[in-house]
Image 1 (tube, rainbow, N blue to C red):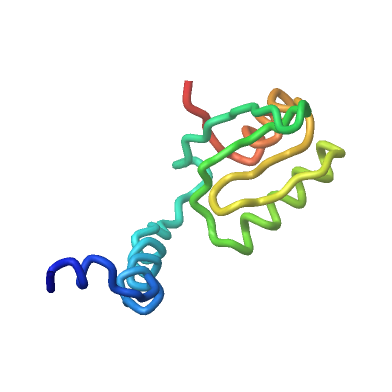
Image 2: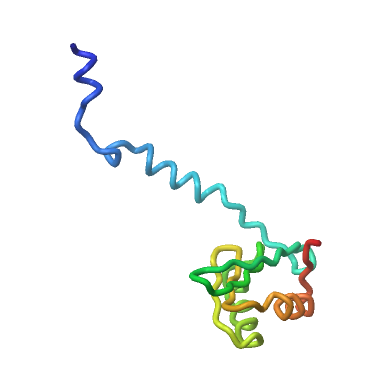
Length: 112
């Protein structure tokens, strides 16, 4: 009977510290290696979100400030909206070929 009381104990998962340590370990495992543009091997992808195309390129191994500057420059050249999410850049519309041309001129390389 004592075993059954332990199975139905009242408590919250937040009372335990396991959940909080898991998030800290997850963020600390992310590598922050900075590479030169010529050492990158970027991948171009396209997704459809709510029926609209989104062009994605990455992963970039740059400092956050350099990544946002590059993203802003590319948005101006493409004439479209976009964002930087972690190591990937996302641009509105189907613009993979133009994007590849601009990034090759900046010194980046692509897989395939």
